[in-house]
Length: 152
Image 1 (cartoon, one colour):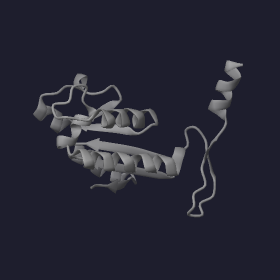
Image 2 (image 1 turned 120 degrees about the vertical axis):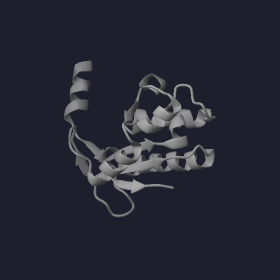
Image 3 (image 1 turned 180 degrees about the vertical axis):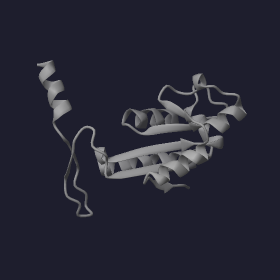
Image 4 (image 1 turned 90 degrees about the vertical axis):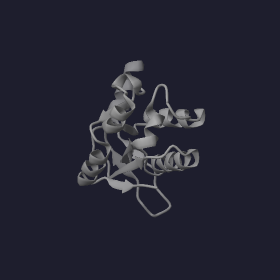
């Protein structure tokens, strides 16, 4: 029975929900490139700012389901959301939201330059976070790959 369920999960397409904007249901098969790609710049330690950005990320997931790829690039003071032991205060609600979004496939990239300035290594990051050499370069390269760029 468990094999049958696993087979169904791997072989059947997922359906992106229809939206009020008139969009039709789209079948998304595992391995298919999503129709939408977005990258968020996350560069502030302000709690209200962080909540707003993370709410937007969640809203995009709710709207597009499996039909979107989302990357959050954390640079400067924003990088602390990706630390095992942040050097700036990060409310537990934000830490939980970041972890939850990562479980839904949101990628979190940490700026290597910021990490060098803080004397951090990859071991200082949460397990799902990945270091990029230069956060600003990652933002540019993702835009060159067709990602829509969002900044507050």
